[in-house]
Length: 279
Ligand code: NAP
Image (cartoon, rainbow, N blue to C red; front, side, top):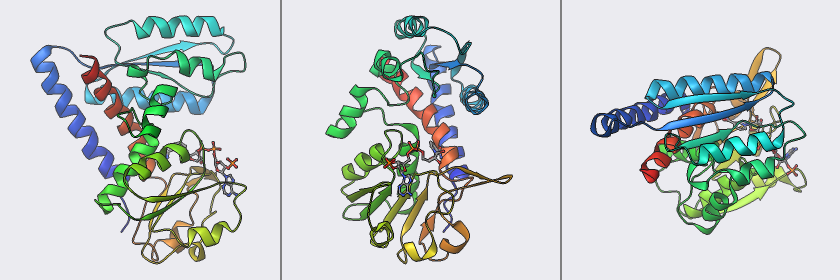
């Protein structure tokens, strides 16, 4: 089974659009997403443009606040406080990476946790780790939703995660623990990685190395979620050798068209959830 992330994201976006239309008809209010974009890094500009377009399509009132790359940290923190207090803003996102003069930690800490649609603030990270209600980072949430399309009950499964970033590996591990999986987190210093992967019922790969996971790393009948995005010539590929692994796995996400589309759809979902909690 090839897990069709594009289709699942479309279904999710339709659900969100329906709910926002219904809220608007009843209250004349819609969720608002404020995105701060600093500098002229081209991938960030593309991500922000896609987020803005998708937000508008589902009825979210999206605004992008742009700054030049030499903007001061103070100015950004002041803007975040203003957005925290703005009743029309339900979600705040600061596009990463940031220029050197701006502390990522200070920026993330200054966003109201109730408006933290990326789920990066210590409050949301702590709530997720404690098993409490939390805003979950978009890509990990998308991974879980795709996994659940294949298997509703993940309890007792052995999940192996390659990658331990705050963005992907760690929150994915927390989500899977909450689903009662047995979780192994691996990283660049892990010994005998192939042997560990061979024990996985669920293998999540979030590294950023093309073709890291090969056919002989994968257990028959496992579910594979490939988070990686790598440029190979003019093609985008994941971290898993898709062609050779796809017939061995029970289910696998392709790249592109797997986790990627779910990430933006989950941002819209988080924005709607924040709006509902705030109103
Ligand atoms: P990251 O912060 O660079 O983390 C990469 C992780 O992989 C680290 O934990 C690193 O280990 C580990 N690693 C590196 N080389 C390894 C190796 N040879 N064997 C095992 N582990 C290794 O990356 P990230 O932000 O999590 O992103 C990972 C990938 O996902 C990237 O390709 C990124 O573009 C992609 N991504 C996709 C989406 C999406 O929507 N699909 C969203 C975000 C990111 P150490 O901790 O020991 O360094």
